[in-house]
Amino acid sequence: MPPTSILLNCFRSSAELSIPIEIASGPESLAFDCEGRGPYAGVSDGRVLRWEGAEHGWTQFAVSSRYRLSNLCDGSNNPRLEPYCGRPLGLEFNNITCELYIADSTFGLLAVGQNGGFATQLAAGVNGVPFLFVNGLDIDQNTGIIYFTDSSTKFHRSEYAAIILSGDLTGRLLKYDLSTRIVTVLLGSLAFPNGVVVSHDGIFVLVTETTTGRILRYWLKGPKATTKDIFIQLPGQPDNIKRNARGEFWVAMNPFQGGPRFMPLPPIPSISHSQAMKLDENGMVMEVFVGNDGSRLEAISEAQEKDGYLWIGSVVSSYVSVFRI
Image (cartoon, rainbow, N blue to C red; front, side, top):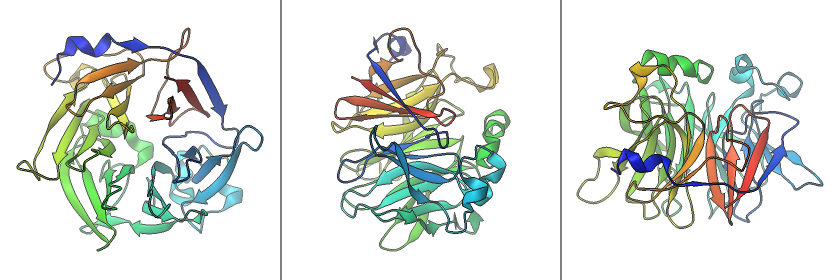
């Protein structure tokens, strides 16, 4: 684990472009399809939208349920409607089949074809326990296995603050095997598991714990297979984590909530503003990104690097931010 002193000393800033989403809000996670189109973003009213460029803007690509009522849901930012409308969070395309996989907080693990439309539910629970807050998602592009998180078996997404304040430890890291259609629990007793990402070689998977500010590493192969360790202790609370083309990881991070009782032990310097942190495969900090000159990142949920740009999502904003890096 790297010394805490290096966590706050390698900042970068650059030009920003904001892409407004006028028909909804909360682009929690972003994805690009197998042809490089996008980004796609899951938003507050249960839809997945696709960016078609400045001329056409955002268009509807998919919805989480065929029973979703457009006149009730379109444009909604009301968490109480999520059980009816859905709330797509984690997104990832299978680069071979071009299917989009969706972690929907209400409807569980979903999939939709490359032409969009109504998503198909793949899993709604495991071992007789229904999902209440499916959150992050990643795909091993070599095996097709999907890794995803269920943040709590007690609280829904709209009650996320209660997960942190109560110290809830019912979160789980899971995998879904497309060939067997079986969901397996890899890790339980997690403190608000959120983002998840597979290493480029498929040897391990990382999962962020929002409450504790940790990233855990679960070994999939090798002598440590089926065991876990701490990949890094962070100075803030992590959300999603994404891998870039070089096998490095970008984690979105926000200041701690809940007071000193929920700070890591031993205490470490805590961030005061949202930021994106780039890590190498050994958990060493490579870079910290805080925004451009004169502005700061606010309440970010994801940082994804693509073709020399850093795309920033937020579960509360009504836009996607783009930075040249």
